[in-house]
Length: 319
Image 1 (cartoon, rainbow, N blue to C red):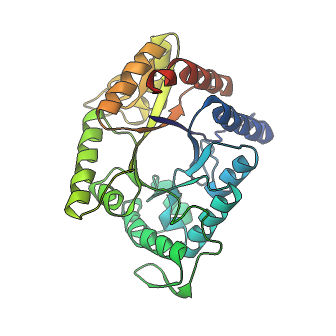
Image 2: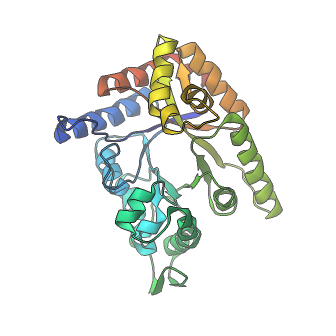
Image 3: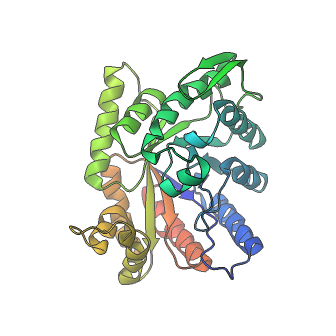
């Protein structure tokens, strides 16, 4: 099993100093590097204080300069906001600067409010079409000379400069929740990066990807079966669940399901023993790469949870 971290610069109060926040973020990455986490991932979001990440390539290049081992992932590049030549070059340059440590995650975008500001008039629900066109183009640019004439982009013969250090290219993780995203992962990706999936949905999605790949004659040996996993680990199970409810459950509460029910279904939350059990349940559903996002009210709480998880949970799953 691989345990990875999603690390965001989150400014939850106007009193928070940006320089302190940046320093704490880097300290988290360095702690993860030393604690045995496999990779650290940076998102792409715009005009959001809760996730300050307008360019994940910049953030990961910064982290690369201050770490030596940990791999670095985009979680994720939002295809509708970019041009294929930009993405290919930025990703390859990061792979070069980091010594071949890039994990390339790509998706269609999450929030309509961001689309309204970055791509006015484009519906978030249409973002997947850009992923479908961009991903083959980026792979072709990494491989050599390529000209493109598509629905959203057209350009004469070009290539990625530089080329990625990893050959034929960095691992490609396809993010999403839809059937179309699963199909992209099965046919074009090296990994599947779903988020906010129940155990049943996880198992179903992994089975669907396996079937699609088999029908296409594609071998998924070495494929990365991932999950973006909100996590809260504390000595007191009630306090851990309270963080899960506040940060996840309350966002997605419905008339049919309470915030606590949603938090229990989507989060790993509880004591270290509870977390070991929850991790095992997800392994049984097919997950092999856990991208953990720790839920805590402050920076100190995140550091404490990282330390607790690395010391009391991860060793249970090391061969």
